[in-house]
Image (cartoon, rainbow, N blue to C red):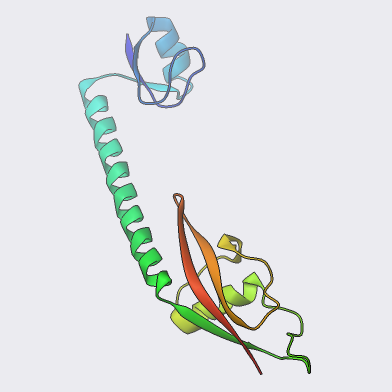
Length: 147
């Protein structure tokens, strides 16, 4: 009997492959445990349609991430912090404060874990890198001003 593997099966194959197996193994183990489906014409067509839909969704998501990356490269956000007599910051600017300022000033929401920077302890303009997903990184500018 021919089966379409839904999940990876050790010593048989990976998900998406069509394999020829013995009837008992196919019916009693692979199909019963949800590792495979009988490889009928309808099942194969449905699987191909699902794969095309997943690929289309991935292309759409990547296009949106590239657009966001371009948008972020043009952005500069400002954060004002108290400054001491010698011109140094009290404390520093954390990832959480950067994410909050980005949401308030530009309406772009980020998880602080996706920002790649250390605590900023100096005035001036700094470049902040953000992980968007699918190995796409964006860079935007942060201006730290004294109060």
